[in-house]
Image (tube, rainbow, N blue to C red; front, top):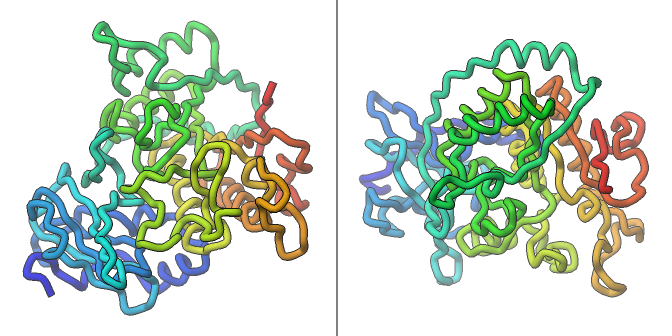
Length: 394
């Protein structure tokens, strides 16, 4: 045991682990990642990360001069693949990464935290410890939303935060500057909702946010997490709803992110005929892996419950539904019944929609689905995907 890391503290119960393994833990942000806690009278940070195939996992940062060996986490006894450790004295704002020591003596991988609440602004790649204490003022809005539901007229203004307007120096507006100018603009033009192209952390600005690596972290290009909460709070104060683009269809292959996270194909499908997206040169989640389902559905609920978003527009749904999407004959694998339907992705989408409607009543889900797939907005109880709306592709 390291003298710098205390093993034993945990946010997980046995039931949490059961749900995680079953693909039914939908609040993983409360357990995974970096959490500021107090242990035996001393404040510090408890780290938890899923890396079942690693030989050893250490946390590194400014606090140990980025040493990859001397702050080891401990693997849980329950074969969940989760590593944990409490580091006394660390505070919000601490930079950190995970050093994933691979088996067979392969090179040690430096990874940002898949569950981090904030990452450094690109091209820097470390995660940041966050302890948000934002004091929301939109209680009446949330109550009215739950009572009224989504069956009311909606006029949606879609925008990319990074390019909507620029300041006098040519820089993108911050979340707080956006609140000053976007709110009156939307009121003047009569929109009921704003839809943000992905605000989740992404390394390449030119992707407009559609190549996400931080499924629980808003982009730090525009400010800190509480700054985004402030923007949403002000929009609600003005009677304007917020829809967020959410991208469970693929993710980029940046070396510091979730691709081959523990040296194996952990989040992505191992077979490239199912795990690689030819259109976007990106990687496809293994939707059949239960821990990945827990990760993705937790992410969806995170933005609705923690950031008070009023809905999710799910990007590129068609690419999830079809195993042969953008693939020629011989470039894809059929499902167990010989068809081209991605049964595991279909199940994920149904579970996600059911979870949203149960845990975030009044919130909407919208599918960007470009084919004639039946019952996209039909209830899951009737064989539908469970979305509230289907996006008009034009």
